[in-house]
Image (tube, rainbow, N blue to C red; front, side, top):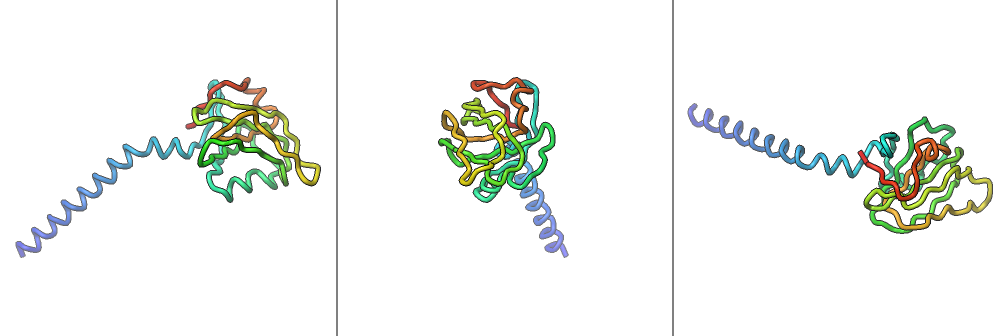
Length: 156
């Protein structure tokens, strides 16, 4: 009887320790996980709610087939390393502003009002520099937000 009681107390202590350890790890690491998968990109106090495309399948699909993108919404493409990432508008049905950001979230280039592809093959949209992130937002939003190359975004 005493042995069973001691064993149950031991299991309770171990369970509490493991729970405490996991909770501490979550509290310490959650800011990094959140930053790695942002839900907003902000410029000068203007924020865009984003879908994150952080794997090959999501990056290839992008915003293809969409007839509408809500105001102050977009898609953030997250790449594994900073490089020169060309985009095209194949099967994208809405005009977009495309914004390339480097690893410091500094805007490297902006292409405004990129139209849906009407040709085959679709022309490539080529940035002037390397990026780690690419943000697609509704055409005209970059002008509305007053953002320019050299500005810095905040990923939240």
